[in-house]
Image (cartoon, rainbow over all chains, first blue to last red; front, side):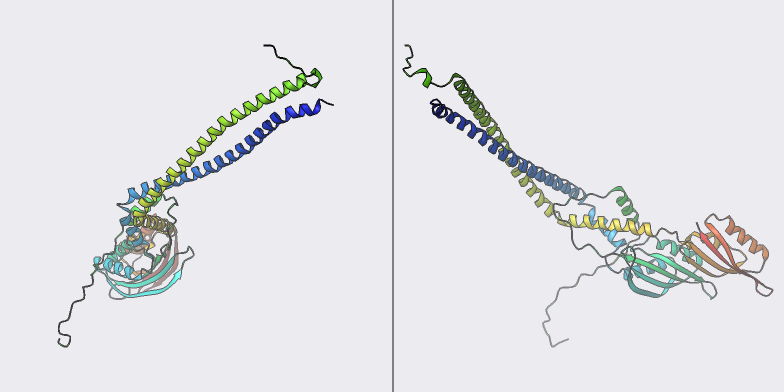
Length: 224
Length: 175
């Protein structure tokens, strides 16, 4: 019994040091591992972000030259607003090219298609020889903006052949938002390239844009 | 010089206790050294990860600036992809071949047959015509029958009048 206090006295110090070391090791290690885990996660995220940005920059740099022209072709075929006027311009051009007389041009009201597209119906009369009317009908398939012939009525009873043609043209509003900067972007795939190649071969409407003149000073406001 | 212990041996620690304490000391030294070395390694790794993250964030910032400089290209590319997707959808929807364009040979080449009215809608064409002679009528029908464009050919009306000749109506369904 007299030995117990002395044993405790000499054993308590190294045991305490040992227990303290073990506790410190466990706490320190778990803290370090937790820190490493979250840092690795953050590192993976930043590296992924960096790779996304790098590939985005590569794609943008590669497509910088042609993308505006290509987008113009696509927008010309499927505009963002009602293309009735452009359709009239294109149909009239095609009719003139084929030696036909285009008249009675009517534009219907706008409607929403089941597929989410907006559409407008356009009808008109054509007068001229049958082969030219058939050529005109063929040419409509390859003009921009898009025009789809719904119905054609050919009337042979009068002096000249008259065709009444009902068409539909579609458009779709432009997207209002572009994805965030860190969102990945892909270049055009083969299907998209094929569609674009087809659309870019279509006849495009050409306009002469007139720039407004600068205001000029009128030296004699009361004169002519 | 010899070690002199004047304490009675009963008061001294037990040999097994001393052995245990010695072992505990050794374990404490080992754990302490391992903790020190391992701790240094972990701290090094943490510092390395932090530097890596900072460098990556810096590079990302540079890339963001370069992308912002190409904002108009990005907008055009995004618009182009959106439009081509929709155009593809539209072209897939409107696949029906124009029936009038597909029937041009029948409509142009018909000696002895007078067309009065032709109505064409996607996939279908209706023809109203007349002829004075049976032979011309025969060759017109033969011309249509030999054309591979049509899936169904329906004679919707057929009349004969001694003054005007044959008057008939046809409905042709394209393949």
